[in-house]
Image: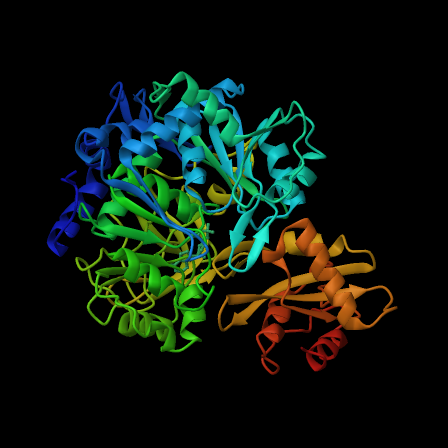
Amino acid sequence: MSYPYQITTYEAYQQAYKQSVEQPEQFWAAIAENFQWRKKWDEVLNWNFKEPKIEWFKGGKLNITENCLDRHLPTLGDEPAIIWEPNDPSEHHRILTYNQLHEKVCAFAQVLKNNGVKKGDRVCIYMGMIPELAIAILSCARIGAIHSVIFGGFSAQSISDRIIDAHAEYVITCDGAFRGGKDIPLKSVIDDALVSCEFVKRVIVFSRTRIAVSMIKGRDVWWEDEMKKIDAVGITDIKAAEMDAEDPLFILYTSGSTGKPKGVVHSSAGYMLFTNYSFVNVFQYKPGQLFFCTADIGWITGHSYIVYGPLSAGATSLMFEGVPTWPDAGRFWSIIDKFKVNILYTAPTAIRSLMGFGLQPLKGKDLSSLQILGTVGEPINEEAWHWYDENIGKKKCPIVDTWWQTETGGILISNLAGVTPAKPAHATLPLPGVQPVLVDENGKILEGNNVSGNLCIKFPWPSILRTTYGDHDRCRQNYFATYENMYFTGDGALRDENGFYRITGRVDDVLNVSGHRIGTAEVENAINMHDGVVESAVVGYPHDVKGQGIYAYVIYNSMHENEELTRKDIAMTVARIIGPIAKPDKIQFVSGLPKTRSGKIMRRILRKIAEGETQNLGDTSTLLDPGVVDEIKNAKL
Ligand code: PRX
C-alpha cells in the first residue's frame, strides 16, 4: 500500500493546505482517486450550511468494506489487520490477517442477512473490546446496515433511549465483558434495556465471559451457533452492498448542551476518505508499522482510528480489551514491548493517571519500538505532555495533539508527526481542507494572531456530520445556527503568535470527564429523577486526573438519613439513568441556587465556587437572593 497523498515536508503541507482552500474540489477529488469505487461521483461537493446540506461525491457508488478489506487482499492478505490483546495478560492474544478478517466479516454479514437485517436497517452494537466488535461493525457496513455502537459503560436506560431514537430492530451484544478486575454483564443490561423496546426482533449474543444469561426464545441467538450455519454451507465471501457516497454509514450518540444525546450521522464516502487521509498524514503511517489506539470503539476515536482509518489504509491496528492500570500500571508498556508497537495514540487522562504511578511500572519495559505518540479527547496540560515526551517517547518521538469531535468524524487540527512543528499543549495547525476561524460572541471573525474566541469551521470537510438522526433541525440549531454560515464546534480556542491553535475547552454546558463527553443538563435531569431532589445544577471543576470532575449542587427536600448515604443514592440514580461514567464526583446540598430575577441559574458563579474561587465571583447584584452565594461558598466541599 502506498499513499501518494502523504505529506512529508512542511513545504508540502503548506502547498497542500493552499490548494485545499483555493481548489477544494480538485484537492479532494485527487485524493478520492486512490480509493475503490463501483462508480465514480457526478459532483465532488454540494453544500450550504443554512439547512445544512452537505454532499460529497454525490452519485459515487462504493462500499467502505471493499476499501478496508477486499482491495488489500492481493497484497496484504496474510498481513495482520487486527492484533487483539485480551484483558488478562495470561490469556493468549489473537491475530486476524486481512484474509481472515475479510472471511469473518463476510460470514457474519451473511448471519445478519439470515436474521433479517437489510440495507438501511439500524443495528445497535453493545459489546466489549473484542475483535468480534470490529467484525460486527464491518459486517453491518458490508450489507449497508447502519451501525449504532453504544459504549459498554452506558446504562440500560441510556441504551433503550438510543435504540428507540434510532428504531434499531437488531442488537448485537456479548454475554459479558472483561474490564480490569471486573466482569460486566452486558447481556443482562441489554435485557433490561429491551423491556421498553418490544420492537427489537433479534439479539445476537457473542459468548465472551460465559456467565449465565437469559436467552429469549424467538428473539435471542448465539453468535457462534449462527456462524456454524455459515461454516456448514462454506460461505467465505459475499458481495458487498453497493452504497451511495452519501448513504449513512453509522450513527453515534453524543452529548450536547441539551438533555438528550444526539445521534450524529456519518456518511460512507466522505467519512472513509477523511479518516484515511487524516490517519496517514497525522500519524505518518508507514506500511508495516503497528498502530495502537487505546480508545474504546464505543467512542468516535475507536470508530475512526481503530477500525476505519487504519483498515482503509491497510495498516495493522492493535486492539486492547482491558484498562491501563490492571493488573498493574505497566499494562500499556508491556503491550508496547510485547508487540513492538510503533505508534501510540491515547488520552491525556490515561497519561495523567499513569504519571501518578511514577516510573516504576516502566522498569524493564522496552519502548524502543515507539516512533510516534498521539493524544486526543481533551486539552493536554504541559506537565503531562513533557512526561509523555520524556518517559514514553524518550524525547525521540514526535507527539501529535489531535483536536476533533464526534461530529467531525476525523482529526481537524493537529501537527503532522515530525513534519509540521509541535508545541506542547497546542493542537497547532489545521489539516488540509479544514478552515478554522475564531469568532467573538457576536460572530465577528477575529483576524490575525494572538486572539482567542469561539472556534468555528467555515467550509465543509468530507467527514463533517450530515445530520442528527431523525431530527435534522436539531443538527441545524446545534451546529449551524449560532453563527451564520459556520459550523460551531462548542470549543473555545486561542491562536498564538505563530498562528497555532490551542484548544481551551468547551464554551457550552458540556463537560469532558476523562475524555468522555457529558452534558450538564443530562446529569441534572438524572439527579432530578431521584426521589427527594427538588432541583440541581451541575458544573465542571478541574480534576488532576480526569481533566474535569462533576460537581453537583443539589436542593434536597428533607434530609432523613445521613448525608453521605443520600449522596450515594443520588450517584446510584445517575448510574442507572446514564451510566457510571456520569456519577458526580462531589455533591453539595444547598438550600437554594443563585438565580437571576428571571429564574436563570447563574452557572458562572457556581463554576467559580466549584473551582475554589471565593473572592472574584463577578457581579452578584442581579441575583434574586445574593445571600445564597455566601451559604454555598461557606459550605463548599
Ligand atoms: O472539547 C473538545 C475535546 O473533546 C471534545 C469532543 O469530544 P468527543 O466528541 O467525545 O470526541 C473526542 C475524541 C475526538 C471537543 O469538543 N477535545 C478533543 N480533542 C481535543 C480536545 N480538546 C483539546 N485538545 C484536543 N486535542
